[in-house]
Length: 141
Image (cartoon, rainbow, N blue to C red; front, side):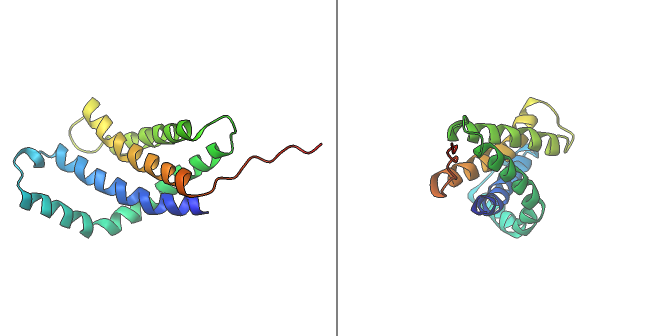
């Protein structure tokens, strides 16, 4: 249960911030930026944080379920599990957000994919590092 809580708390927060950074980059916002403009970015992020949680809550829980399934496969070590969860989230985020706006191409695909990859890997790492993972049961004879 703690696994899902970590994914639900970390995923929308980090993913929402990365989505904001990606959309501002795609719009050309970073071409001429000052410190005041960066401050405005954080104001917008905190004003839209509730929407990040509203729309990012269920996808984060789905990625947490994939992580939960992979933890029960004995041969998959934590590093590989984090990579697999991240790649799964990368593909889903790219397919979900990649068709937004007039731009298309490899840069847009990668940027929107990182919106899913980074939060899922961070969440999976936090779960591995700070939450006890179930040990496989020994077969009784």
